[in-house]
Length: 96
Image 1 (cartoon, rainbow, N blue to C red):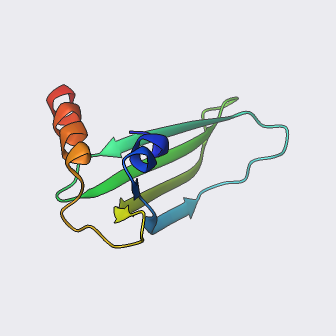
Image 2 (image 1 turned 30 degrees about the horizontal axis):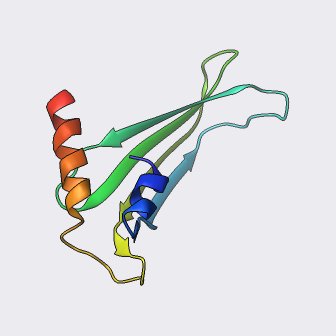
Image 3 (image 1 turned 90 degrees about the horizontal axis):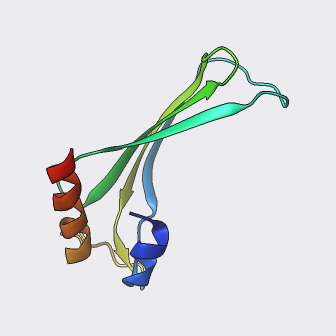
């Protein structure tokens, strides 16, 4: 689900929680590989895990995770979540 899809429905998904663990340095000349994985979760939230690796040796540079919650365009928190999100989530879970 893209942020454009979310905002197109009149919602936002601001980051509620961010965890980052830096494991080693990267240099300006390194080519980095970024992997983002959606994690199914209870309720109306988007949870993602992130890994950044060095392309040269596949060394792990960083691990991170985020939790995003839904708000209306007016900034009101939506604890139930929009219907379009539940439809997307059901589709993703059927393919998971």
